[in-house]
Image 1 (cartoon, helix red, strand yellow):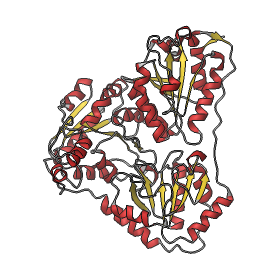
Image 2 (cartoon, rainbow, N blue to C red):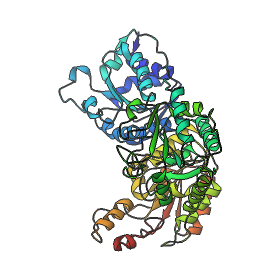
Image 3 (cartoon, rainbow, N blue to C red):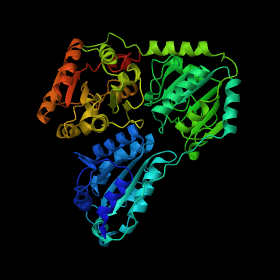
Length: 549
């Protein structure tokens, strides 16, 4: 006879869980008690949104479901931000929520929420376990659902009395991984399309990639001389200094790259959905009928034909597809090799940061310094805001597993993601980028980094405004500023108050020594960059946007 709490922990162990992220609550005390005797590492966080984002980051970097526990009501609703990120970003995650006791349900009891209704549109599967003897079944199924097809978040509601009840239950067994593979007929059809193409282009995106798959994709690109782009915030899927890399297919795309994709006669889209952001509001590939012959490779059959009618649909995971197609070779030397070289040259030009701009701090030289200084396996995380443009456009990613950023555009992600990344890979450098508005949405998770001795470095780009919104505001309603000014704390002093290391950068030349002191401190650190608000983008100032010049 075991309690529901014990069965939950045993099922997690059986499915390979090594850590959970949580904010404790009385609604799942039985699980916390069972964790006391478990080898699973429990990381307590400061807010449920941050905890869910940490679980998302683990799922994003490992391909295995990140695990998060929160309490009912406000705990669950706080966590919903992380669930939305995992859903839009196709990341495996399992959220466990303590629920009111069974006798109190449907009475609007203390902190009661109907989770099937609340999470129904932003989770892949939502279930409430009423019978503790079915815990092994439901938890193992949750791992399978979260990782199969298009990965995503699963939400499991746990009534308090169910967790304390004692039952007999079968031993939990690990889930079986489900793989979708391409057929030979589809590979033949793709080979024929490429053989007859004049201007092909490859776009990589989505999840279910790994180091081996990325290496196989490089082999394919080299064999067929293919130009390769990575969709929005999926830059870690191809080495940016490889001669076949053409650039980031995302917000603020290189105009030359956009023109190349629009002019392509065959587009091979592997793993991605090609949503609103990477498609430039569905203009690079027109919906529902693209101008280009579209070959769409996706692990979830429901995504094939959902937004675009593909010329060829291949229901396969990215890793299985590239493993199979890497065995194919072109019958003749591809005619587009010169265009591929031009595309890479255009990327190198586009990703060379400017050296000047308004104010005493220039972000261009700072990005140049980080490119030269950070090791190739450094992990960079960020949330959302105009500051992220500097990272995505000018930081040249070299390896898989080095990027964690929400394609959903959610603010507040960078700091909690950095905490999760450092807990997973303590020997690697982890740098979070955040704007001043972005940092203060989940900046309290810096305390989690201090508590667990996780020496992350958070670069806070402080320009005293909600920069992206101000940019749009000045463009649409010039000089009518409302609700975008911010008055901020001294972020370096805040870091020291938490028990970390703090630095303030007010001139460009101050950044390098400040960053090195932060890295040498051995503590979680904040390096605050005080950026002129006029430096709103790498190429335009707020005044230019306001004046439409």
